[in-house]
Length: 157
Image (tube, rainbow, N blue to C red; front, top):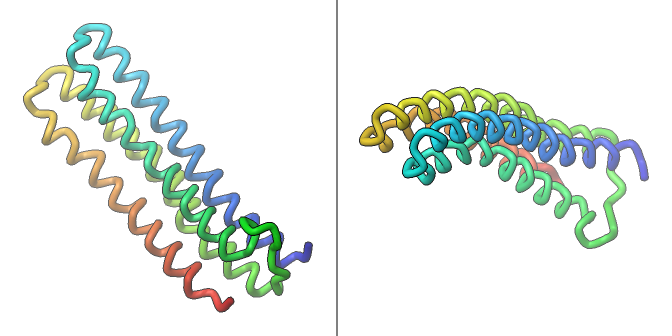
């Protein structure tokens, strides 16, 4: 395997790795807050569960970018392409938006989710509004997903 192919694989792996780490941290923080609320009122389980899960989407987006990149590289079919260093770098940088925005946005979304869980704990009738705060952070993860998809698809075969 050449350096170009290794760079492309590193890009795909970084998208899944960093976005996944961010989501694991985010869902963990949300779970801690949710558990505290459910301890006091088990009837709020479904509301706080939804808020806890929101930072998990970045990990899914990172995995999607990794699958798209690996598929285009031929790894999924068992015959990876030999890429030039330039093409490998293109894949690496095409995956970077999802890797880094996924990491940061999941951790920031966790903060908004934890605050929203606190809101639901005190005012369960405000659940719909509480969803808006973490959803706003999600916007940036979706934008990074779109940029990575467009960038990967723009790399010449």
